[in-house]
Length: 78
Image (tube, rainbow, N blue to C red; front, side, top):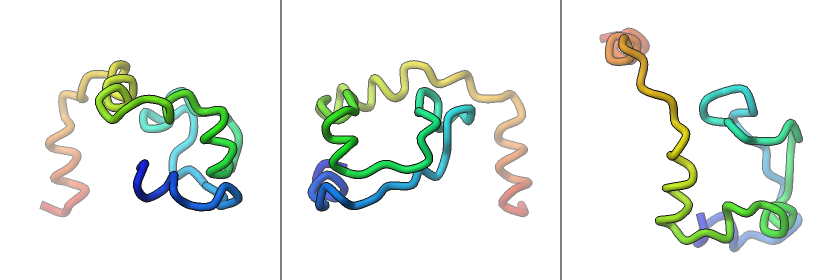
């Protein structure tokens, strides 16, 4: 992220693939888009090093659903 995304110009627009309400988008704002510059200035997660970022991002992940392996296999057509 720091070598690829945060080196882009500040005016580059970002559009999230997930929004708040999904497990992946937990804690995200309802803002439909952002920019590199806005996120660099206001997103506290970007001030963390890799270890801190991963820890903060994963500390509230809910437990894996009991049937997850079966769902993944079904979605892959296995």
